[in-house]
Image (cartoon, rainbow over all chains, first blue to last red; front, side, top):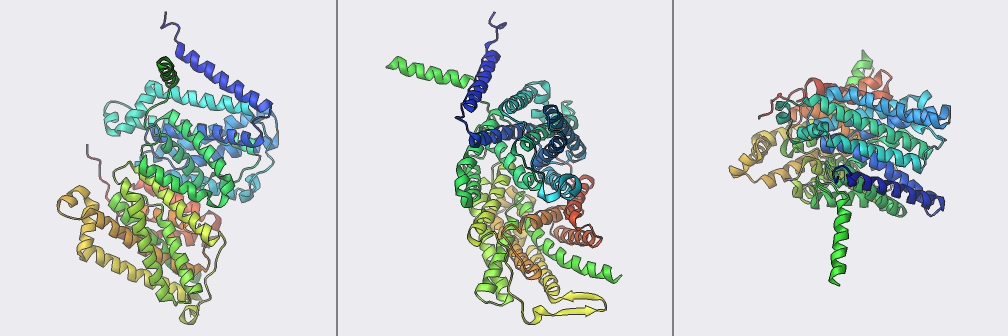
Amino acid sequence: MKRLLNVRPVKGLILLIFTYIIIQLLISVNLINDYLQATLTTICINIILAVSLNLVTGVTGQFSLGHAGFMSIGAYTCALLLLKSPTVPTFLLGTLLGALLASLVGFLVGLPTLRLRGDYLAIATLGMAEIIKIIFINLDEVTNGPRGLSGIPRFVNWTWLFIFTVGIVLLIRNFLRSSHGRACIAIREDEIAAETMGINTTWYKVLAFVIGAFCAGIAGALYASYFYFIKPDLFGFLRSVDILVMVVLGGLGSISGSILAAILLAIISTLLQSFAEVRMILYALSLIVIMIFRPQGLMGTREASLSVFTRLGRLFAVEKGEK
Amino acid sequence: MEQLLQQIINGISLGSIYALIALGYTMVYGIIKLINFAHCDIYMIGAYVGYVCMAKLGLGFVPSLFASMLVCTLLGVVIEKIAYKPLRNATRIAALITAIGVSLFLEYTTMFFATPNVRTYPPMTGFMTRTFKFGGIVISSQQILIVLITVILMVLLQLIVKKTRIGKAMRAVSLDKDAAELMGINVDSTISFTFALGSALAGAAGILVGVYYNSINPLMGVLPGLKAFVAAVFGGIGIIPGAMLGGYVIGFIEVMVSGLGYSMYRDAVVFAILILILIVRPAGLLGKNTGEKV
């Protein structure tokens, strides 16, 4: 009976719906104002980016420094479509198309370059992202060049953000728990051993890369439709580094770690807004300090789960009992 | 034909600068397998030290060159001791993030103190203002200076690496760190020395760029840094002659693409060539492809 009524997914679902309703309520009574909403959007987009890069870098062990390139493809596709016809179906179509285009580029780039190992792959993906950026800068008549596109209609609201973020996190979590995810972890741990055990390493590496690019494309589309304005510089090397930092800070391979780091970094960067001049210096210093003292990231490879709450609950219960 | 010769000369001077920076990347990568992203910012600091010496202190070119090489050497060693040494046994990715952190730190600290504005070097005097004409080809004295200094530094570097004890230690450590340590080589001081050498070369490149292009800014290192790294990979990372070859090839390609009228795409071409090289010869032009031991 207990096995039939597996409570954990139900509990998770309730928690999710609860989160959604609470934040929606806070928005509707304007307790979360426009400024906080922008932070919320940044957090959701960062979660999508971090979790999807985690699949590539943390889980499969393929070092990618070009995630922002995929993001820019999604952003530009969606923005261009929305500027043509600003309707909700176009927004969804643009998001899908952007994600598909990003994954297509991911496939074309990934197939040859994923033969490379470690740092070489990092540099190749970095080069790929730079090439995408330069193409966007030079396609003047389509993308308005370095000046970027502005006045993109906003269709992204909390509901869409929530659906996309939760959807992608669940997609990647379920992927990890499937045999495919196990194969990816095997590749990270020892590629040669994985190959010997009959895992098609190329296929799985490209698969992880393509899924990662797909999600980054969605994140880009959300970004374009929320922040009105995009330009190629927004998706440069620094953005890729930001995403990688989230993954490493959270812990390579830990989905909940990535989510935690994405939230943490968005909050820190919002708090640092008022110290504009020293913001990047503090950011750089914290990177160095965190890496020196906790190179494995906040969560290591562990996952937080709902049992954390149960354990906390038990802790409180014990304390009460003692009193 | 004259056009082509002129482009070749421009390519050599640009390539010299890339080669100087690439040497630092390749030596550090060869010895601790780290892409030292901060290297390109050491080059930027070199340019700024040169600026301070020439514009504020009124020193001549040669003393300024030595000053910026000295400051960069110290900076490189300090960075290695503070940021990279604690991470020597950590994962590669953690070390890489630290390097990026150091790079951002140097960029934005410079921006904080020196403002993000572009600065120009003071006007040159004497020999530095001369240009030489051979038929239709123009060679400026700065170009001659760049090539001359680069060649001298490279010869010196080769002598240090091939003929001295510390050079021998460097080669030993890059081949096998543990074995070198067992043989009584002080690995820590060897790594510091490598950083010192690479940073000195980057400092020299910085001041040469300042003199050549006459404008510097706190983010000037980012793109040349990436391209110098491409140059190092191109020639085979960890191989000193490879970095020189790569630097000159990348310099040539860039000048040629610009000369053909596609200057907006020159960075894209450089990165495309990088990807192609990596796919066809992952170990670089001069590298040997070694299979992984199981």
